Length: 126
Image (cartoon, rainbow, N blue to C red; front, side, top):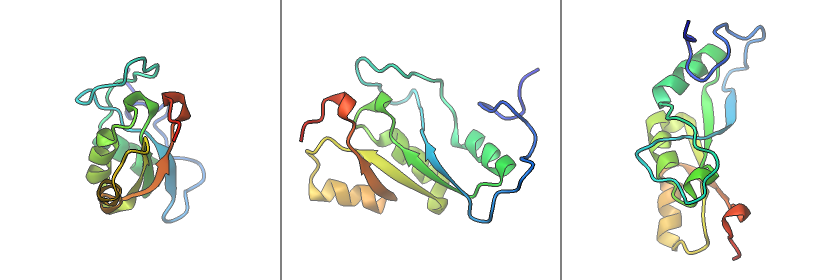
């Protein structure tokens, strides 16, 4: 029998309710429409934001922080796409490589990104 909630080991609500405004503070978006970086080790299947919303509802979580995983290097498009789908209740952490212009950083901010990540495993040196 398949689980009621994709990518979740349970179907029941938690015994303790999450407080109002609870936040999932680290979530990755994976989407096969976007290419992975050469040598990526983590290649999970797609998971839609609709599936994530169902899990959020089950757990009583209203907010989320999406983080670009190493799977995509500094390509933040999967995270930005998921961020747009989740709307104002989500924020993002983007991976940068140091070559971004002020305008590119501002565009990330405008899309809801509030943090940056330097992924040293990708060879970032600046």
